[in-house]
Amino acid sequence: MIGLSKQVARPAKFAGPKLLGLFRQLVECLHSEGVRYCHWKSNHGLLRAIGQGGDPGLLQSGELDLDLLVDRKHITRFEGVLALLGFKRTIDPVKPHSTSVLHFHGLDAATGALLHLHVYYRIVTGESLLKNYRLPLEELLLANARKVEGLPIVDPKVELIIFIIRMMVKYGSLAEQVLVGIDKKAVLVELESLLADGSQKATEGLIEAWLPGLSPALFGDCVTALRDGTSRVRRYLLGRRLRRQLASYRCFSRIGEATRRAGIFWQRLLWRLLSWSSSRQDHASGGAVIAFIGLDASGKSTLMRETAAWLGKVFRLDAEHLGKPPSAWLTLLPNLARRLVAWLAPHLRMSARQDGCTANSGSKGGLLYRLRMVMLAWDRRALALRLRRKAANGWIVLCDRYPSAQVGAIDGAALPLPAAGAGGGLKGYLALLENRLYRQIASPDIVIRVVAPAEVAVERNRQRHELGKEKSDSYVAYNHRNVHLPAFHGAHTVELDTNRSRADTVQHLRRILWQLL
Image 1 (cartoon, helix red, strand yellow):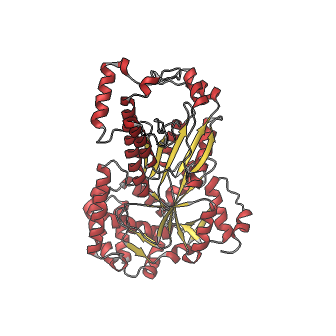
Image 2 (cartoon, one colour):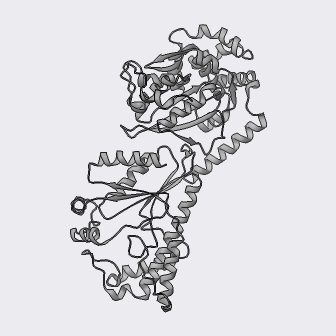
Image 3 (cartoon, helix red, strand yellow):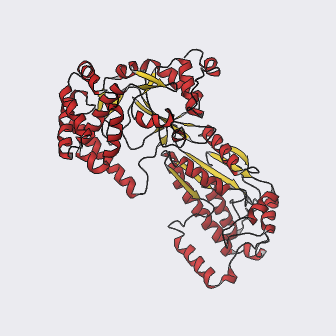
């Protein structure tokens, strides 16, 4: 790519008011670089967003994505523009990988929304479960595109051919109709928009030239069936005929197609049973463990929830509280027994008083307290290891708090290590065991250190509305004066000051995370 940074610095300007934020930047930069591309399908929905009187907020809200066909000779230039604009490649963990179809997501700095690009270097289409047809129509689409607000959009007469093939291939599959379903109303609305200017008359010659194996008469019957509300049986039979005529464009053999479709179906079913979303994607560069650490009332839990709602729309994501982990199998019964004792004899509980002082120094040095701290370290390690494995398999993992081996740090080791050379007995052994368990927990990939002035934290604590969970002003003030946050070697650590409006803080955090992911 030649002179990309210079050209992008002074992009061509379009007069249209509809292209906002990252969407507008993308169109302008691709124009500056001379990239040959077009938006090739689902243009009815796109025009509602950017056309005359449209609603550009649809793109920013994530309700629409962009289906772009890019000239293969311009791939390097195209992906260079995406890199400069901060787009990141994502991967669908369920569907078979195709070298010709890629996904990218970019952060719109003004709104914090993630813009999805569904990028095609070749036309690959078919059912929702499996794209099994590679149609040699790239040049036809690229050569027949008109610009709307600077964005090249394929001409309706050409899009009509693609649309009919896409829909009838789906109707020709019982698996598609039973497992996925087809919205007949939406199909009819989009079809009518494509037929509005008499596009069907121009398709016969194009079909004969570009898809000689497809009968124009059959194509006309398919248009009529979709438009006139023909029965599902009729549509199924027409769909089967069309699939037979397109057999030379199949990506897989019949056996290969059936095997792959069955694999995708069972994998999706398993994910549904495990409450995982099959529509989420993975970051192409891998998952990440993101830890939010901070003192009381600093805003870390709120920011983690905001981040989970934001990234969870796109990525496979898990959010956990590592300060209060669930019991592992080894500690389940002891933890149940401890809770039962605390319920039956609350005066025996070993916990911090609201003024920030501990219950009594003797109890903190007792054997039961040390056993409890070792069990807590075990549970934290078990949860951290499970989350680390998820991140290794592509998940984005968010952690409210994160444990460390630093004695005295928040959510860190609680038992002071015995002096060198001193035996320490059973208590010393438990301190060493607790520290070893914490040292076995790998550092997170990204650490967000959430900070706020003590007086701001005290005021926020007063405004909390979770009845029965408030902490006293003196406790919060003591916490900010005397408790320190741990450091994690090798992690990308960013300090985030929350002494600003919540909206500004969230936007700033999104920009930070998107840069680090």
